[in-house]
Image 1 (cartoon, rainbow, N blue to C red):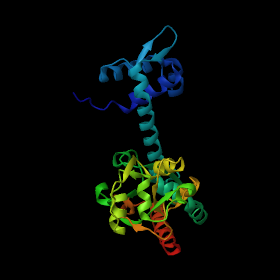
Image 2: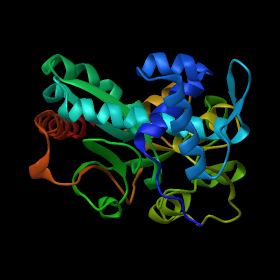
Image 3: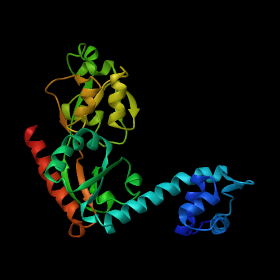
Length: 297
């Protein structure tokens, strides 16, 4: 059975009462009477069909369901507050909200952040990360940097960068690798969420995978971490993985050998014409910055 979304005011009162563990203290914060706080919490509980608080003589405490519900309510209220301030607040022209896949944010955007803020000190950027489509659907954002097909996000977009794949491992592992066939003596760490992985590399290089043994990870960052602990050989995805590779102490197994991947990073947004001014500025800067990265490779 579906439950209609509760009143926003009920949720705001619930969050304050849960944080204060007191209807009276929440009433002071909200400029309401304790009786009004209690009434709105009771209305929320009746709508949801569960008790959110255990009532005591001089305080309240969250039930197990209330504790489970609170983080989602707090996140939703914070997202709404940030979006409202960013779009309609006094400083709305200066606020920019960008969401990016983790490896692009950590490996590339962090390097360009100072370049952007130096050129545009009047723009205050909030950067969050996500990896899966349902994570990108959460909250408000002006622009999103995704990996894969932009059509999957139902948005307009610009291609930013592709990726080059090549095997990397600890130096002591690499010392025993003289050619592609030697890779088969080690466990190969595969990122299951990518269309292009070890089979694509083998096919592009004309190598028969033979008895390749795979260890599956959910991200390139995790693959690098596993390789740094000697768990096997990972695939670098340059240039986004360059920083993670260096920090993990990994080096190329076959210098000079690399294969273009099948997918790329894209900047996506609902409507280019509707982008707010700071988002247009960031888009222009990012396209230019990524072009400079390609030329420097």
